[in-house]
Length: 603
Image (cartoon, rainbow, N blue to C red; front, side):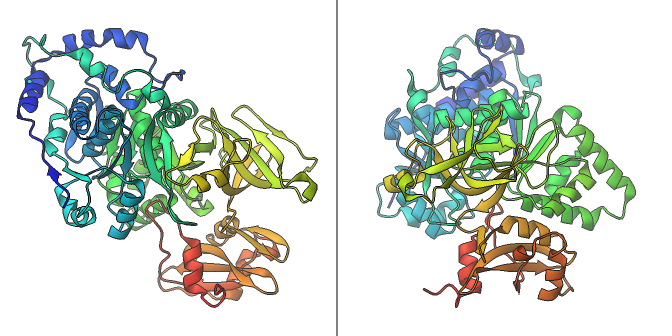
């Protein structure tokens, strides 16, 4: 059975506690003045600066708030550095071993993530919603040498690690406690000369380690194939974060509300690392609840300096918030007016991603809050690639233009065999402009490919999958079909499951879904292609209805014909009680087709 390594930090805890109580605000400012004067917080340079390097200069600013309380940048860094020392004893510094962890959405996650990077290891965050069989796959596939978790998860984790040589560490909550913010009222003026500030600032592996090392393995959602471990380098992460900081104007005044899982780029990069890179703050909830989010958005009992002003979520989250609003607030005009005024004036930015945003949700959210959600497009392998503008028109159903530092192109394969099956480039774009290489005056549809420092280099232990995912000239093939029209990009869906080929037409399942979601009786739906001898595929709609309502195919078809061409209108209707989605709002369509249409999918 794996050994449980329990930390004994009595000396460390006592020294840190004395340090936190003795340091004065004046001395703290003087200590970090030199660093602040020479470091630009989010200036992109040739040298990669990990997030914990930024933490030193932000000192006693509040970095995080979880259900336990507030944490300073300095406190998180001190705890992470101490934890890194233990990882160094087990693995050696800078060895790039894999460290998997299953932790709650609170400061323990941040401390562990930073500790992995300070020690020079590769972090593998996992999620407690994964069943034991999936966790077992991730652990074995990554060959994690160390597994970190809490007492709560030991009954699940210990059997998975039995009879292996992996180290099991139970996270010591003392590390989290000592990182918490100290009330200035209890601070005194004791001499603090015994504390080594330089050692704190210089945390991490020395030299140019972070310019060329790996940082993170994120497993793909597995909605179209078996999950693959996407290896992101420190340079990938640094580039992705700085791209968003530039595009969305994040500053140290921002306070992000975090309700997302922390094993996915949306939760890790967009909502956790972005504010921590610029000296902002992250308010992190243990899990999503509609009432908890509305409480933070309205912030009835909070000062302006503590109000969240940036919120990023998935479409499913916005749908649940709308349902809660309709159930609790619609009959009270004063509350409705208050919510609209607070959200429209106090919240700077609201973002949606990870799944297509249906127009009914977009429109209803604007009606409730005054915010036209900023929809963006990204994936584990490349972070965020396309985004609607921070300032300017946000067109529902589109994902705007390339983000800073990102190059995209739309391609299609040549039909002429003499071309050696090389793709023809239709559109090439970056953050400044896009160039069209076709005479077509209509919308241009092609396969999306991406290039840049944000793009990963390889899948963990899958060289063949890596090779197949890149073109000969180094472009990553996203697997998505995209439309370019009037300078704007629109995601039509995964080429493998969302593009339905029926009667010679290529139909976007996402467009059909958006159209039929406007039906008053439909609360959720997906659209899939079902194999057919005559048509190639038929368009099938799988819907969830409002309680107490009914819907027949002829009625759905009449409704759909108002906004869709005849060839896109569903010819099959299945009514179900629920559409299963993962915690990022994504659906495994291949699995659902096999389940609901077994005869059509038999080989």
